[in-house]
Image (tube, rainbow, N blue to C red):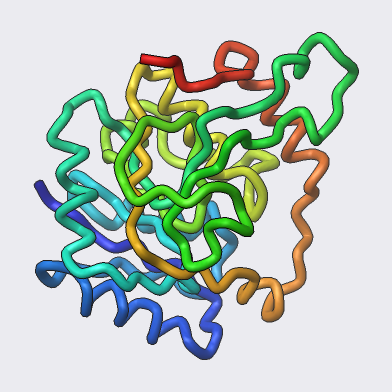
Length: 227
């Protein structure tokens, strides 16, 4: 199974150090597709179009990976053909039960019961070092099967998604396609917020949330079924 790192960056000063951590802890060297100084979805789409590997990694340029052979854990998940998306941090639930019974409220699109093995895991939810199905992944680490993007028609570059909610939209689409989303508790550190200090945000937070709610009524709300 082939993997490529998609590296979208605005060039914050330690981005190369973060990328080095992926190389240094993986079991082998993987190719990198770079996209610099672009809007999020434009960069992601360029990476998609310029690569051919079966699995595309879209990890933030401020992610430090500290676990040896983490890549083997990720690729193991894709041995199941029903798995379409894998990441290092995810929630068991996506959106509140009253999302469509109540007037639109952004908090009703919350991710519920978040799991990770980040250095700051407890500050964001619950620490989990194993592997499990989740409803929604955080965008700091996404590994997507190319066929999911193929069926989606690529990234929705002309939509209100951008800095906000691209991961949530991808997760809804993955579930819509009948594929599983897996969270793998890899030891890592998401430094967070580095791009915001370089490029001012112009994407609308509210518009992205309304668009997600309006276009995913068949997928939301969702909670991972108990086995």
